Structures are given as structure tokens and as C-alpha cells.
Length: 175
Image (cartoon, rainbow, N blue to C red; front, side, top):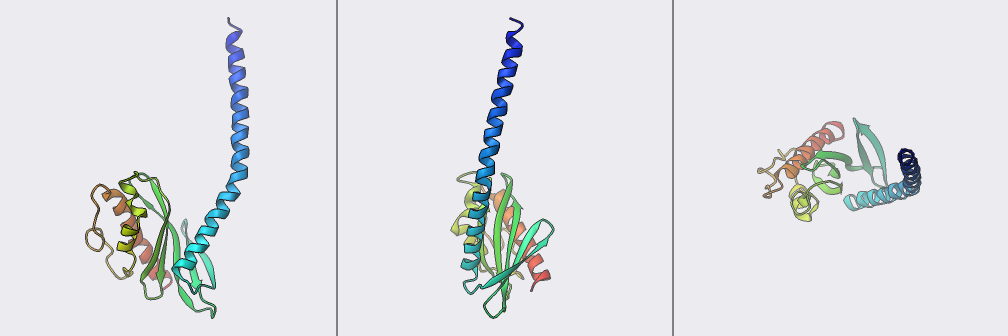
């Protein structure tokens, strides 16, 4: 009976190593595919935000990326920020587009961990339309510029605070 314990441990160790190797292999195969899909979706978002886009330049400020957008004549059209906010469920990754007049012209939630049916209101067109059209000079405050939706206060507050912060960065650095 005493030998049975080490055999079980060795068997579980081998099974764990095989499963870990398989997961690592699957991750190695799928990671480039996921990254390519995210890049394609981001380029599509740039074109949706700025249809005249002919090119862009990327800049990092802290851990976040800001992309200056240009038309075919190299005229500056605006900035698209790839940034994050803190919500109830954790990190919210999103894109925010602001034109040369300081107007928010686009917003796209890339990923989040908010509660389905409550906090995920941040990815709805209704919520995003409350943000789009505001200007970097606006206060951009919850219950001031953006009405809160009951049950999603923390998620919305995190997004609105982040939009205000990002609008300030874009205004200071690019406009």
C-alpha cells in the first residue's frame, strides 16, 4: 500500500506535465492569431473613427498607447488612445478617438470583466453615445454629462473618470 502513494504522485505528475505541455502548445499557436485579429479590429476602428485616415503614428505615455491619425495630405485628424479603466469587475480596455477640435468622435470597448446584464452596459451603443459628442473641454462627469444607469454605477464611474483623464492627456499632449 505504501508504494501505491508514490505511483499516484508520479502518475499525476506525468499527467500534469503532459496537460501543461499541451496547453502551452495551444497557447503558442493561438496567441499570434488572437493578436492579428485584435490588430485587424483596431485598424478597422481607426478607419471607422476617421474615414479619411491614410496613416498613423504611435506614441506611448506611461503604459498606454496614443495614435496620431493623418489623412493623405499628412494633415493631422486626431488621436486614438488605447487605454484602460477600472470597473467593478476589473480592467476595462477601450479605444477613445478625439478629433482636432477636441470632440470625442468614437469609442470602442475592446475587453472587460464587468457583470453581464449590469456593468457590461459600458459596451452598449446607448452608453457610448452618451460619451461621443462630448468635448475635451467639457467636465465629462457622471450625472452631469453622462446619466448613470442604475446598477452599473461603479463600471460607468470608472469609464467616465478614465475618459476624462484620457481627454486631458490628449488635449495637453496633442491638441
